[in-house]
Amino acid sequence: MNEQETKAILALASEIWANVPLPSASRLAIWQEMLADLPLELVKRAIKQLAYASASPFLPPLSEIRRTVVEMTGPVYPTPAEAYGQIHEAVNRAGWDEADIKEHVHPLVWKVYQLIGPYDYCMAEADVMRAQFMRMVQSELARALEQDRIPEEFHRQTDALRARFAGEPPAALADQERARSAREMIEELAQEKEMES
Image (cartoon, rainbow, N blue to C red; front, side, top):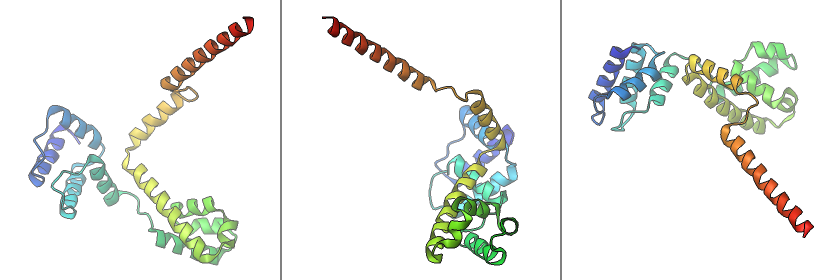
């Protein structure tokens, strides 16, 4: 979204939520940066959807607006119950044929199945496995939705920074190491002095 579109979004928000002031230059810049990768019409629709669904008199945070857009347009994930149904049906049909199982389930379901392990999945008591599988799907689903909300460009920038600083301790840790080394040196010198006297 460009600056004019961002102004339009904030104007819409200030009409829906009475406590939203007209945007300052800094607020406008932040909103524009955070919503830059999203089309205007989707953001408008997300804001309207949030207005319909919420009884709160306050503007939802940007993360909530992004989440709503992602839910409207992003990948469709199975619910935990649907995920268990998929894996249960696939394993009953395919047995130990992992290629066949993988072909017939959602990638998130496959990931959870792999995390549990085929042997453990098949050997566990059915009720226990269903509960464990559904909890793990819920956890992976939350993680996937969180990652979907973050723009691809931000992921690329984060990966580049991670690669750039790989293996280097953060400055605070380096400072702690130096402080500890200095303390250790002082303690060693004190011990040596005691031994000499």
